[in-house]
Length: 87
View 1 (cartoon, rainbow, N blue to C red):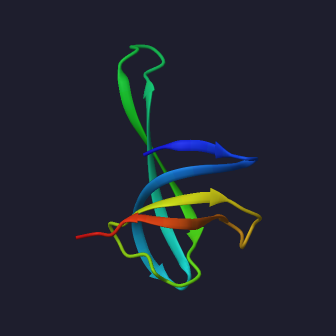
View 2 (tube, helix red, strand yellow):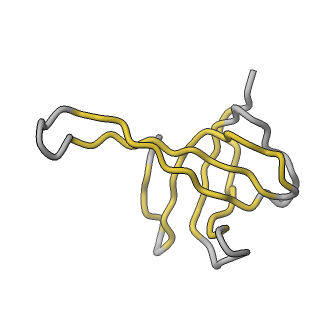
């Protein structure tokens, strides 16, 4: 799971966890950070609601999302491309 800046838009990579909504998917993005006290590497997970215009994503797909203007109350990302489809 990668996070990078493209121009001024933030981009992340994650796994689709839910596609039950219309034109919306829940994308889970993992990042590895050191524990504040023990300095061991721990995995933190964040969930983002992303706009999927064609309803092309399915649960388990690895997708790239980019930051965009707010589409609804919690939806501030959109699916830019599907990296790998779920098997």
